[in-house]
Length: 234
Image (tube, rainbow, N blue to C red; front, side, top):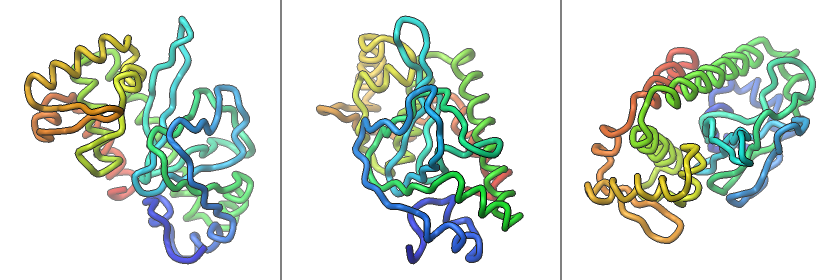
């Protein structure tokens, strides 16, 4: 691979560190709903979403339901292990918005980290940021209203796709919130009545971004601030 892909974590690497990984990066085009891992799968590959592509982590709960934990897009990677060797997926990891994804064998990353302290440090700091993101999500689910959380998730998707039309269905939003589809539809209708959102088949249109952000809790901002402090603005 020549040049840097549209993934901010890979762009952050020094030339030397990127060259350790570049020959082993495989480019694939993945469609929305493609499953990277089921809960319990062994993770032996790291995935780097590029451009607007992003994936979600859906944790199984009672009644055969799943609740979205967090999203990963071009700012990061999926499959970073806390220790050496393959780890087990705790959640279902699924492509939410399709696009270009780079695949890297985990063993190659581990070998490169042994050769470069700066590479090891960057990925360790990123893994720590993911833990912080999970903690923030847990706190958000306990402390904030469905309306605040809906605005937060929709804003997060908007930031990933960098557009006002986001490919998010009522059912997908319900999964993010851990509520029924009918409840998610009622929340969307509330935002539509305030002329913050509109809908079309398979998508949500954001009409008033400032109003949407004002309706959200501050969790996205808290996570972004932490990423900036730990990873220098990533």
